[in-house]
Image 1 (cartoon, rainbow, N blue to C red):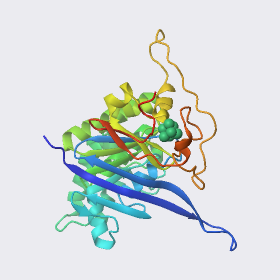
Image 2: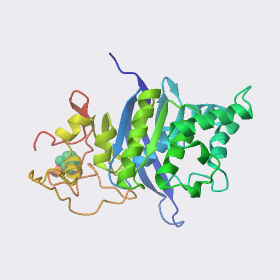
Image 3: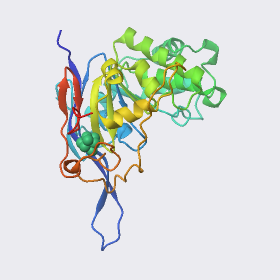
Image 4: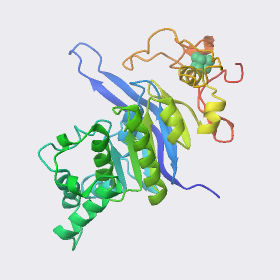
Length: 326
Ligand code: SF4
């Protein structure tokens, strides 16, 4: 059965201008540089990579929280790249975000119940009464594993895991079809992380939601994703099904990321790939393949030309001139 594309990012660029003196040429941080990506209905697609690789910026551009510098974004068959006003508000109902730090995304002066009800106050629905709003909010509050008696408490009275549950409830209030989860468990204790991941999986099954999941944690990504995209310095360098990526990583950067994941089996020895040098500045990225100054397999052409994403097996794409050589 052919999979339906829910979100299509085409040649997305996001440059942040940097203030410079009058004499200097205008400069920009290239947070995303020509990323193309399709997200399928009902899947969990994860974006991984080091801090500053552009994964969160991609997620924010995808749902219109940030305006792109160029490129097009299509949701179902609608071009949503430059939506404004009412049209943008309507699209917000379809696409929501779960943030990394749940506390800073919850208003400390409001009870959590009021925070949830406020969503429907902003996105008014004809005929919806105060009682309807409260019923919906309470239903969602219980759905994410909270208790009825906690509804009138304030955000500071909850633990990190509970706050993230409330953040999830708020993101789901409008019954979105696509949710961007931006590092939703990285601020939580390990024991709580699995509870939140299981909650996200349960909700996805039940409501046929699509997730664009952003994380730097390869173990978390393996657990939750159907497909994984690896990003480096604003570029997508590899994209594949989760199983294939973990069994057969092709890009040297993906191989290095996976080699750094601790081995659970003490009898199995893993060869660690150490990357030399620092991640370059996105203000002045290297020419050609942006990974060439850290890549153990680089050859002269790598600093001269930019490798295109190439499909090397069914659904497995990689951007590397030498993926067959090692
Ligand atoms: Fe390394 Fe060259 Fe491949 Fe880039 S294109 S990852 S520098 S071998």
